[in-house]
Amino acid sequence: MSPILGIYASQMSGHLWSPSASYDSIATVTVGSGGSSSITFSSIPSTYTHLQLRMYAVSAGTYSGSDITRFNGDSGANYASHSLYGGGNTANAGGAASQTSLSTFFTPDATNPAVAVADILDYANTSKYKTVRGLAGSDRNGSGYMIFQSGLWMNTAAITSITISAYAGNWNQYSSFALYGVK
Image (cartoon, rainbow, N blue to C red; front, side, top):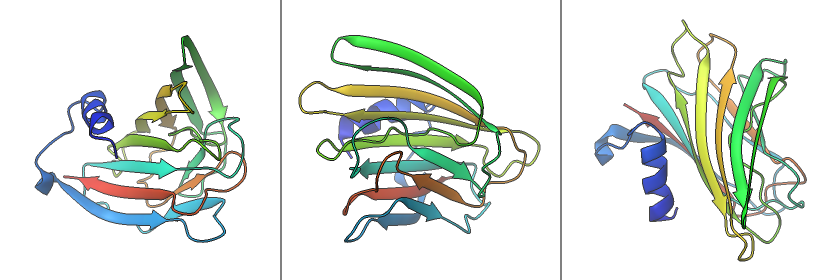
């Protein structure tokens, strides 16, 4: 991950930065030969305060939307998201409620990898809905692209699994996804 993206991500995530002993690597998935339409982190322990997802990925499809992220296999209309995004010299905003998935990153295209960081706050708290905020970027062959996203999973269940699917096509070989627990 780019050091600059890491600095931006720590600032965006409410100053979650802390000494290295405050983060534990839970799991890392690197996509193998032939690609994969989705990756899943399962059996997530409930021993942390927050979770952080980090991604470096390339999609086999053309860019046409954000990834599809679901918690605990929930495909009901229980998600909402908002975003501020832009490429080159344009900026846009968007939002949607009652969605069947959450956008935590955006799906890059086949030639322009994306890097992203997303924080899942209070993921094990069974008294409130889950909030996600993310930052992603891609060079996009010199034009640049950045997206700030926030999301909500309207469910009080503790998050025990996360599935991230490419919007179009598969995640290409060597795409990497890492899940960290924040103490």
